[in-house]
Length: 192
Ligand code: MN
Image 1: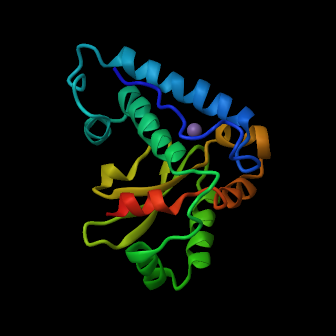
Image 2 (image 1 turned 60 degrees about the vertical axis):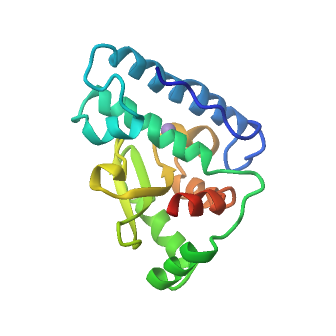
């Protein structure tokens, strides 16, 4: 049985980037539904005792993949934010971003452009390849870069349910606002 994660912050502290109202639905309704759905699908299946990441790697396109992927994606998404974030990367991650994009702002601009350019529902990801190089990917639906052998580090949710209550159709405004709450300490820990 998978459990709905607890948010590591009070529901109103991420405002205005993410309102308490949005969290109430996004975490309390949408993510809860993915957890409940997966828990109904798993009993008796070959995925029953696997960790979430392994289910996402192994399940073919379909309900098990979709619900497991959405749990993994949302867990990473909600846990990367803070109202008192480390506002920029440091150390090895900062150096790698500088090497590949020349500046943090150039990286952010490409990340947002790829989020805005993803047609329909999905996720934009920063991941690490085995050699430590970084890659930005667009993943439709419940996609997660672990299915490509990458290590996911950072993600922005571009499903409309993530931002419609606060930003209506202004996806770019939502994505740019998220930079103010990304805790780069968490992203750095994932890069280790
Ligand atoms: Mn979502």
